[in-house]
Length: 474
Image (cartoon, rainbow, N blue to C red):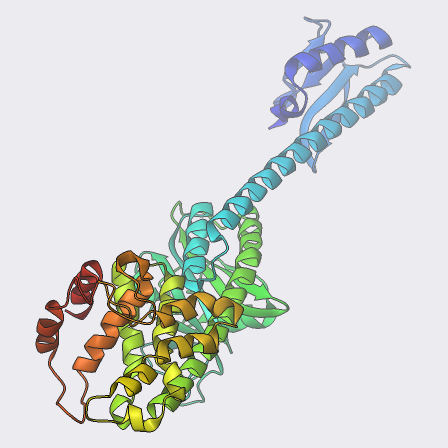
């Protein structure tokens, strides 16, 4: 609409300009709108007769016309001066508005990124990072479905047809090498989307994986490039999660709830968020890989120790799993549960220095042999305490034979003086010993073991930990 002139030059300001033009040049000045309607003029009430005019345009669109009466030699130069001056003012105000809008958008983007950084925190939990990312994308452009998928190598063996969707490769052909596995999905049919993996070798995901660029599809059903795409969607936005020149995942949003297109401003903001989250996800994945290597090493050590006694084979791994379940029931944070698992896995590693004749003895140990056996918690702690991040784990290992009433070893700690993880491991250790085969007795059932342990609650075991143990093993 021509009346757009008022969006860039307010009416009161424009009136003052027309007055200045008219008084300086000695002729009436008019601003014309649609169908040459007079929007403003100076002097007020001037008659628009024999006008000569010029269009004032902005971004290739006419926003008004400026006019003066013709017939004088000075009319055309005056009109040209007014037109040029008004064009400059309009364009200057347009630039100011654009810059103001850009500043506002940048501020909004920085605010969102700052908020995102606060939500991500310093943790290295892939699931939590992906959940934060999905929530942020849903906030920016509410959609019927938001999914976060991460790239992984295709597992060996044939893919499961119900889980792996490959739109461009026939089922009898080779399975894909890289696959986008779903990590989290929000919105409609989120559970179905959480079970759907997509090939990174071809189709839509192959395009995103190879180009490392965002893509918007107006109608997935009609786009020949993506025939067979499994999501029941029309409009689709896919934004890659890229780190150091490689794609580690993607964000998929389908069908905005308001039915509109995915705007460039939304895509830009989501891309910025994707960059920040991709770095966090990469760090978390590397951390998980290192943790897995650490646990594999710890398990190898525990198996080496247990190889001395076939009756204890697998004991440390079972104690580790049960300790983690109890720690989860107690309400420990994910990272602490991970370290409890590690401490439990290594709790008997000090027995590597215990003579096999003592470890394998069926009859009761004599006092000297018992003293030697009781050295293993402290010996195990000494083996790992020099690893900086393992010092706390070493303390938990050291005290897993303490008793709640203070009659345990090596330090005779009592009650809550004993670290909570040590109290958990002590209980899990005792339970597994009762429910495992020994040369001198058969394995007890869960109920039989619990019956024996109940007699020692408050003396050997922490009552609170025992309650959580019952829930964890029910």
